[in-house]
Image (tube, rainbow, N blue to C red; front, side):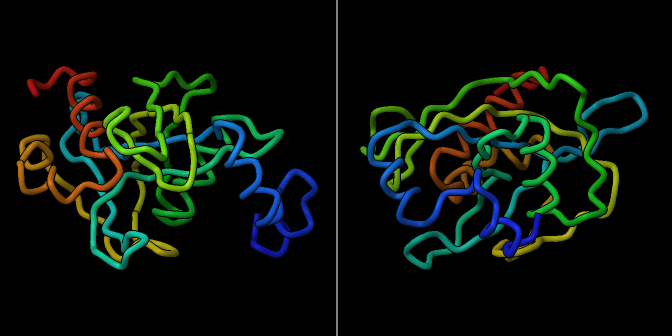
Length: 179
């Protein structure tokens, strides 16, 4: 869906409506950890985006975004992966995806490891194998592929924004890696 279609879509909230909803309701999101796998199905690399945060500082994040009204979770994952990694990322999402965790983002820092100053959000987090060519899109400045060991490096973890470092560690634990 391009931006012009979103403006005409009755399921899409105006900026004012979204701001009002964010003040009163938790908003549903998806987080995705894109991974590369070898022929045996072992994860060889995890994709992390480089972005500017709300204050203009460079940080690392995962693929993330809102689930729209009347949108299936699987479709939201596909839309956000394409938005951030490009149209030929070739994600392999099962017909009925299962999250590895649920993350609760609060506008108040410290309630959970996850923080979003705009809203209370609940996010379903998924590990998503991608087989195609990935390139940063839209507001993503770069895409870095990290080995599992590199993803756990304290320096990389310190660069992760909004609790995404915690999600990255949880994804690795879900995949059987020592964290």
